[in-house]
Image (cartoon, rainbow, N blue to C red; front, side, top):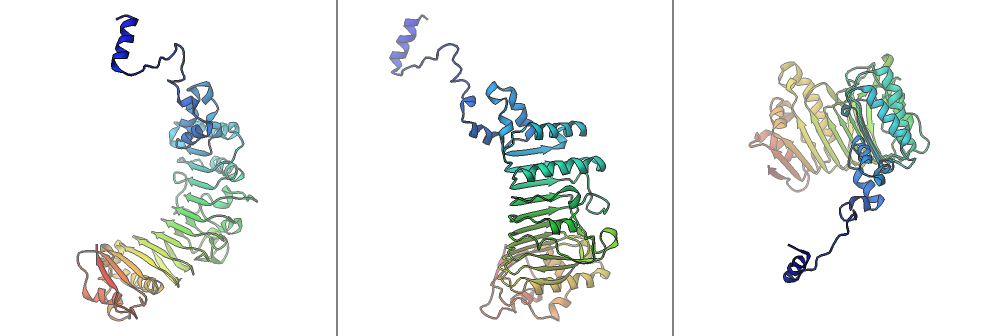
Length: 381
């Protein structure tokens, strides 16, 4: 078909055909013509290793990764630890000196002597570049049941103008250095697989120095009452502005919580020793309780569990909504003393939500009889 035939076909279809001049790549390379801030935003969703590799796409992309406000580093993307260290060093040295909005650093290897200096260097870079959201996951190099591993004070140096709003630490030892650090803008703190141990005697209250803390999550954390160098301490969680608290498998022989503004409390306990010494939640709204401690079915552990549950429920006396799962109901039925001999502490309860097919009457009566106003609503889900 000749050119006249092409033109004839176009006219017959009634649609104008836009011709693209030969050698014009603008229509086929629209990505390179996006504004820089959009390219940087797209790259912020990639791990930094993949973002760096986009530099081969075209000349305009050669330095794009250097401006990305998110740094995401994962050691498992490299075959050798030394390769990962070299890559991180190059990224931090070649990146343009703009602020870092978010940093994710995941290290899964075991070379403690080398790692301390390396991790501290990465942490210092993040904090000195105005990072607001920081995730440090060191679970591959640290065990939360060991005392001879990394401490927070070894990894983080004091930054005078720290702008962190969200901090997530996994596999880091929280020692007394954390108390003296200070995060004036921090609103959310998540600790996972961390050892909580003081290097001085007395009450260990690491979170009281966080004036803006609203959300706190402790997951699989172990408190050593006889901490570093043999010092004896009691763990205290206090937060004057704390609104939401989640405890997931926290081990402690003495745990005190003071949160006068707390609205939501989520508690999950599946193993290990836990003893509450005091709980203070004067305006608590919502509480979720999950207790599935296998050891609770052993006769010698019933008394320990009963003491823990009694103190827990007394501390939740102001809750207006309480949720219990089926496993919790099962555990509570093995300690009938708490049901038969004690009055219900739940004086403000409005709604009881139970994730179980059936609940013994004595157990239901314990939770529902304490309300001084209207009868609480019972919901099965």
